[in-house]
Length: 397
Image 1 (cartoon, rainbow, N blue to C red):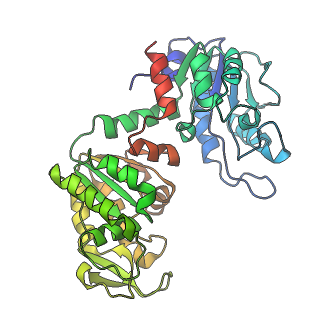
Image 2: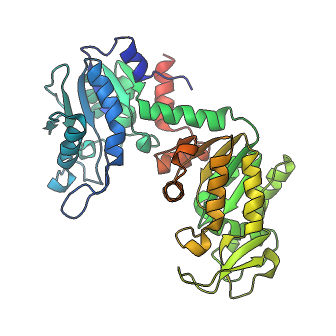
Image 3: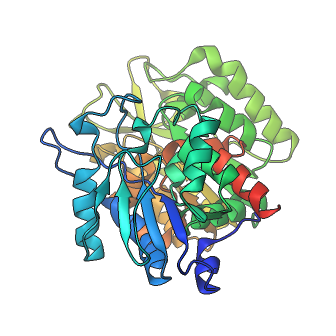
């Protein structure tokens, strides 16, 4: 992908004394008292902000927080806790500025946090009037919020249209590079793992990937639906029988290309969905009417692990079993270890996937961990994200 990197602008001295507007993702969870409970996104935003400060820029940062009503600011919508935490991480005071659309006072070498951008009227609908006003605030726009890259809003898209220069911050640039490496020009074989409770939520992803990948591993409730499509019984397991024909089409499309959707040959069953349920390994042909399939079996896991270890590129979205329950975690653990041991370039995304990566401590062995759930899924669907589209357009003049 061709786009302007903010890091290059800084290295070339082009950010010195320039007004830099950074769209960060500071949408962090808070408790009932408004205290931040997890600050990963704030910490992840620091390198871009520090880069701008080190370059001698005038720095403005904004983000959304929660789901405020446009034009109706409430104290609960405030980025005040974020400004405090950001100041601690940067080791300097970070003033919080309200009512900033019509102008901001800030000097070179200083940073201010602009209050919740989603309170501004026209933000979500990408109002052209608002976007043009925002663009006049800066000389350089920096998009560094991949979690919002699938939305065309005033601070994520509109401002990039009209700002003198529109660039990608280090976080967004890393996502763009990783996605391009995994999907635009992958080293073969390209194997994708798509798992989750329902085919319906990931059908478009499955259909899009079936024309690109050399192997499509399905897991969770999705695998159960594919087992039905293969003529297997799944007892009372979670599945979507009305989508069996769609699953058969995906299998047929893959087969026509000489590719594969491996169907489990053994599974781990239980009589109830609970952490202390008795786990029983069964052949996929032996599932009883009152069985719940909660994981792939060891034979299937070993077969898939071998496929992953031989891959050139791996895309991972979703655990293959109920890994939160230790008795049904073996399949996901085996997959995770295989990805960690593979020489393939791997990219992983989605909340449950990140939880599995953390549980098995393989963060350093995954090539790239994507931070944007919805944006990552839309990329897998084959969609061009608005942020990518406008940044490429601006780079190409």
